[in-house]
Image (cartoon, rainbow, N blue to C red):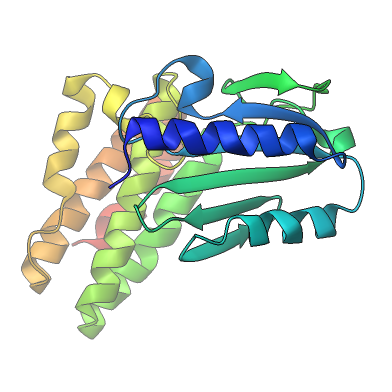
Length: 237
């Protein structure tokens, strides 16, 4: 297990390498460390502005990171897993796109631009995604594909939680705002957890998800919630 001290030493070393790399024109801390919320579980989040030879820069930095045991390529991001379980996220932005895409960004050197911030998902999109998970949840239960059903029920629940997050002004992606919701809002979601993969239990949990979806939809668009109520309740009848 990594320690805060070992994490800080590695981060400082990476920043020093970025300063010395003439192809890197800027760097910033992102994530919890950039806003003073780092704790013992936080990973390293670093954004680099790459002035030239981006593909070669990514390759060179990947080679440099290989005390890692694995890495994942996510577009401009490369995510490394180290043997001590520390996660290191490095974003290799083209120089013209280097800048904050959210509130967690602290410039270390270079001149960031002001790109458009990534917008949270819309409530309408989240409602659509919720019923899109719900349809195969119904058919999976009917077909006896119980693990697929559990996956779909959980997926629908996650969209409804995101709707609640959006309504309360906390982050609505990747579950980041769920723990900041009021206790009375999040408490009913405990009943959406699937306790076994028995069909009756799957239907029970699915029914709770549907009612919570309709309640959240009603906070956004009463008419849409009314149109959804009949078909969605039929899914679990």
